Length: 493
Ligand SMILES: [Zn+2]
Image (cartoon, rainbow, N blue to C red; front, side, top):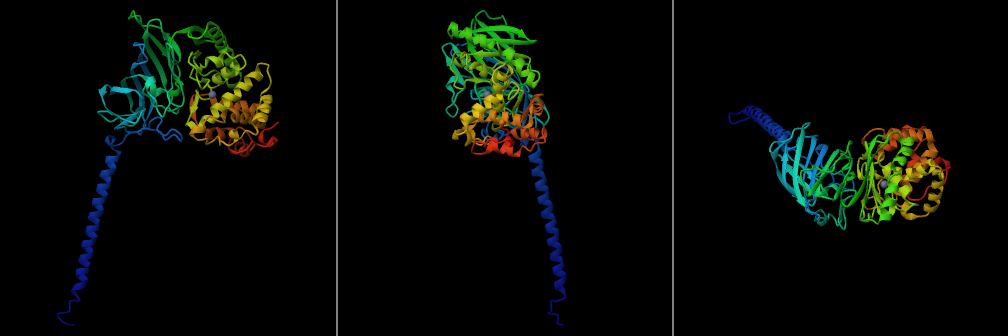
């Protein structure tokens, strides 16, 4: 061993280095942990999280907004200018489902001011219909909060992706449509998965009628000689696209039918003959509802009615809640009208009481509404739904457009292509397959309470109602690219 031999010192130095390294690692580790914790706390702090400008709907990802559920809308519109322009003040009350340092609502008109719980909030816009709100104080998860929005614009001048739900003809002005219509007249969480109560007041020049959903609470506040304010209140929550407003010269018929308030409205811009035919047909709504109640249980709402504007409606009719809107030519067509009326009234159970979870669930509500049109004929002494099935299947069997669409995922542009044919065929096949008792029991259970439900939930509930394996049935009727071959296993008689 020599004095120059550094041997013995090495292990000590090594140990010291190891100790230092370990200490440094601990310090760095602690530092990293601290930084991460701080970041995490920042992320979780109410000041750092907010809602998204869409719910991720498979076909309309920007429709609706995340982070809250609306309880009610109080909509005040001023259409007093009479030129199609409006100013509006809408207050919606919602509950936060997460901490909200910011959130969004849907509106295509110009926002003038927003208050959250009475305090002015910062507002910015992203795209045609998404408005971002930053309240002074973040809204904590679980809290109820109110949002008051002042806005203005000329709805007919606004198009989004080349489309507009505004219908005008002469002195008549209306907003009806799906999948999106509310953005043209009130700020909303515009998606069918967030139904809410709706209260609508519309100020118009005296002598002009304003029609909306629910019960007509009053025609005028009586404090202005030259203007009337129409006030409509719906007793049950509704999806935003099921609300509407129509202003113009209308003939109204008010009444009470089976204990519920009824208002039928027919445009006075139609000919006298058309008005009478339309009103006669609307008056059969109560009798049709009674037939539907024998199948599905009590009508879900406290108000009933119908509205027939004079502007042509390219979609024929729409199941606007408590008061479906009908195209004038369609509702005065004696052959087609009973079916149309039954279809829209059936939607009050399928689509309105039970709303879509997402737009790809439309197959179920449209299928049911179309099948019910067959069933009403059957229950009122006409040909059976089985006969309608046979006739429709024979006509549709080799129509490729109907079978090339997968009904469980039709795509945004083909949402409504096949549902009106394949939907009712599939339901009549289900009825044959599982029998009337299970079939109607299933339908009543499905619609017995207000809910937002998906087609996947329908498949599960249908399967639970029968011992028959419905796998092959759903595959053949909803997904297969060709018409099912007639066989009892698929619900053919
Ligand atoms: Zn429909």
